[in-house]
Amino acid sequence: MDFDLMLRVYPFFIEAAGITILLSVLTAFLGLACGALGAAARLSRFAVARFVGAAYVSVFRGTPALIQLFILYFGGPQIGIQLDAFQAGVIGLGINAGAYMTETIRGAIISIDKGQKEAARTLGLSRWQAMHKIILPQAARLMVRPLGVNLNMLIKATALVAAISVVELTYTAQRYIGSTYKPFEMFLLAGILYMIIIYVTGRAVAWLDRRVQIN
Amino acid sequence: MTDHSNFVQVRHAQKSFGTLEVLKDISLTVERGQIVAIIGPSGSGKSTLLRAINDLDPLTRGEVWLDGVQVNKSLPFRQYEKHINEMRQKIGMVFQHFNLFPHMTARENVTMAPKMLKGLSNQQADALANEQLDKVGMLERIDYYPSQLSGGQKQRVAIARALAMEPKLMLFDEATSALDPELVDEVNQVMKKLAEEHMTMIIVTHEMDFAASVCDRVLFMDQGVVVEEGPPEVVFKNPEKDRTRAFLRKHLEGAK
Ligand SMILES: Nc1ncnc2c1ncn2[C@@H]1O[C@H](COP(=O)(O)OP(=O)(O)O)[C@@H](O)[C@H]1O
Ligand SMILES: [Mg+2]
Image (cartoon, rainbow over all chains, first blue to last red; front, side, top):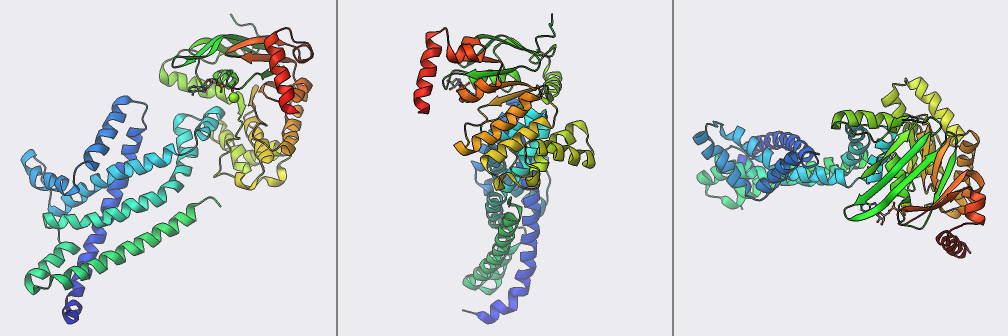
């Protein structure tokens, strides 16, 4: 194994890891927004909204994220959507992650005992007040762990955008393989950096989870 | 249309869950300050009737009136929501499983709704929490979370939470059924106190002795109908109907 080579190129990988992190953060926020909307739709009192929410989840969970990225990036211009690779990566992965997060958020909300909502409504709170003041604060605590799992998957999924040539960690590894012919070292380096990112994120999620538990 | 001496009125209540008819044409009147106990075998529709009164389980047919206002009147969705939220503020409910808000202290459980719906200041809310929790003997635990309280203590906080909205009517759905026997009395004492203050109450209960000691009238329900109703002396001691007798006999045997 060529340690010298790894030491020589790793600063460029660190830089690329920065792009992966940026991509992950943006995707996570977009995913959360889509997930919140999706969950609201899935739990709506309007059948049309419930249908749209369910369709969103089954379409985006039921097809490969890579195909979704290709449709958006390569197919987009055909229907008038012009995005650069980074934008397409964030939007494509964000909408995809949102489908998973929809189910996570919805799952946490419906797992709150229905007596909670009844007690709130009985006091005279409106649907929204009961949701906002009673259900969501409890559901949010239950969401932290499963959203952490979504986040873990989302970080790994950012590797896919190498396929639409976003210069992130995986793409960078491939590029250095082209010039060094050392795929083992290059992919290993990328893998180690992914692991660090995911490990730190996992710890942060575990910390947050401990912090928000009631007593 | 409205007779004000009929403080609470349920008129021809009928309720079906799918094809299952749970309430079959039930009518009920409660005068202001009266205490009515509802007894009957499990599955007879007691909870459903109680939950119809504040529209948690909307009736299929029939009307519920409180103090001259129809609770379940038909209105467009938004108007109905506004109306029912106002009505529910006047109807306190206590559940078998307490349904306290676990992420809030006793104080916060009590003050959340008054602050949100009546715009109480923090100071007013604190005074209210003190007053209501004192009334149920829970002042010392004002800053405890529900998980730190016993079942009886939880139920007393739940009663304080309902009282904090200053309801005109209190509904109790087996408030002591989930409690260990030694904790039942502390909750019954609170309910007795409310009775002495002439709170109008409808109490679903399995405790015949308690019902006999506090209520003005007893309803015996079976299979979605009121089989018999009258003063406790009569219904408990000298019931007219065979079904009532059979139920009470079975219940006594069960208690032994
Ligand atoms: N939400 C519901 N959906 C379907 N059936 C219900 C529902 N709630 C109650 N029931 C049924 O209605 C009947 C009466 O229930 P309930 O009012 O809880 O009786 P009780 O309180 O007297 O034990 C039971 O057969 C019960 O299974
Ligand atoms: Mg019941």
